[in-house]
Length: 194
Image (cartoon, rainbow, N blue to C red; front, side, top):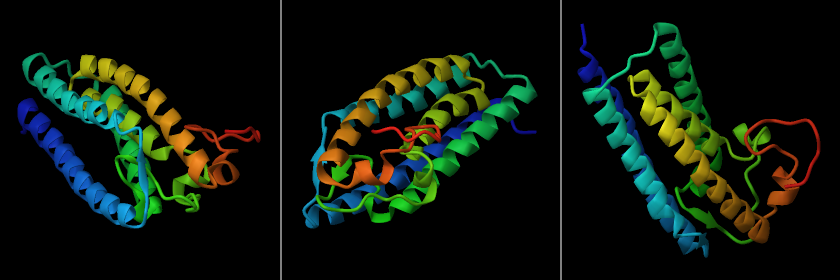
């Protein structure tokens, strides 16, 4: 039987490897977009985003190894479902955005906003996925304090991130026309503005 420590290290290692692959993909997409005249917005947010993710991994490992609090199996399954949902949202958003997906806020003036995949229903499926992962993965590995603290921290960060991204998209693309009637994180029926 696999020990808790081995399970924790394996799961966190796999997710960290995934994030490294995503950084590489983002850098390649960014280089191609800049060659086409794209520009970055709110670059000062990037160090905070990276620090938040790195500290999340460190806190999850520390709490999970030093003072684990394994959840009852029903809660653990629910957290696993939430984590997988977050993964699906993020990966589908990345696929829909294709070469426009980066970890930075980069816009190509005059480009059409992607309105397919999960963007047909909500404006920010990637960020919803990130938040779900931030909350759920620590719960899966027995680190509930990490889940609580970083879900709150991620909420605060995403508040500013979404505002900066939407302002950039409104200035440089057809964002209002394509996605303005969608909810940010939850599908909605009413037809409100951005």
